[in-house]
Length: 133
Image 1 (cartoon, rainbow, N blue to C red):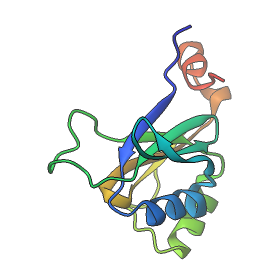
Image 2: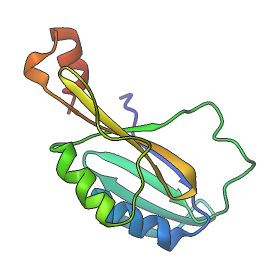
Image 3: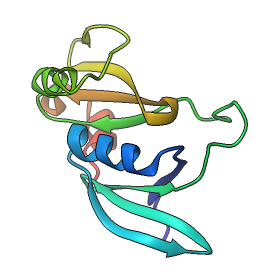
């Protein structure tokens, strides 16, 4: 088996980070405890997984990654709910035909792309890519 399973991030304030993911994106904690010698919080975010180290971020760079992409239904309602929680967005919803997105930062400046697509209006190769799972 070979399957991209999770993203692992550092958290300068684990409680704040967990709360942010739960309130804004409906994440659910599956495990909170020692794993591999340090506190880890494993969360389910839809079909994806997020692992959070209860440790300060290292250095001042995100390394080679740019953002985490999260596919959603009803982007406008999600934006409104997140905005009511105090989340700030880089712009309003940007739309490109059958695809629309927003960018915002989760705690510790983890950049997120929240996107919604109309699968039925996509070429087959793109529909297959986005419709995994």
